[in-house]
Amino acid sequence: MMPRPQAFQTAQQDFDQLLADIAEALDLSSRHQAYTVLESVLHAKRRRLDAPQIITYAGSLPPLLAALFVQGWSVDAPTSSGPVTDAEIEALRAAHNFAPPGAYVTVMALIEKADG
Image (cartoon, rainbow, N blue to C red; front, side, top):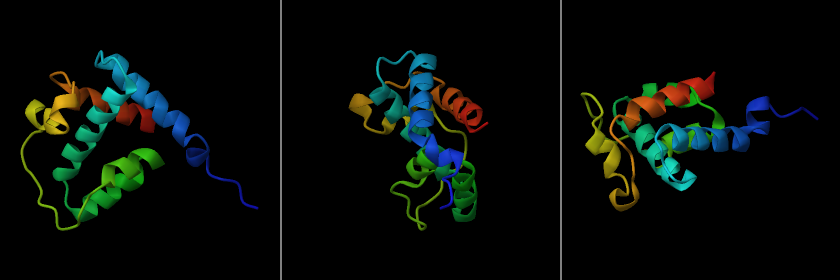
């Protein structure tokens, strides 16, 4: 029997740690809030990539982040250009999204750190 890759053995633990890091860095009160911000950041990043870039980027992410990154994606989805705005990050589940200004940059840095 072939052992599971380390990334799969620790996927949930690594994802939970990233949510905790996001909550701490953004001064959020829960991992639920951190999850919403993370999802919004990943989808904003995805909107700026074409299909081959999306697949390449997803392949570079840890398993649970990759799944969240492509969740709900359609290969025909329109892309966006220009920088990600705070308003774009705050738009996902707006009534429950507590993303502070600059959340995109902070979360992307934490993703890169978590990805090692």
